[in-house]
Image (cartoon, rainbow, N blue to C red):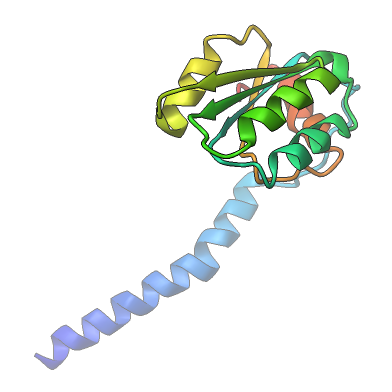
Length: 158
């Protein structure tokens, strides 16, 4: 019986050592140096998709945050689907659409859930790259530029 517990203890210790020491060292050695390759500016057309439900407190800030991105706004379309919101989200989105022509809103009367809304929005998109985000997040000003830079490489798919 003692032999069983000794083997169990050694096995657990090896698993812990593997997780925190052996595996990271092997990944580092296999990966080699991770030098940042200088790539030319790349600004493809982007569609940003947002599923929103009762987001009146944050939706204005979210749209303004996207407008302030360090990216050619003429290459950006924002698709917001309001999932049967029963606060002032729909009214706010309608007002924002007047100020931001790249903002496309879809007001759904029946609840579909986040996945249902995003599936409906994807059908409307013709852009090269899709960016899914939430209404209550905030991008750093270079987020879009950084997201797409590696996509110009032939060996990167998504």
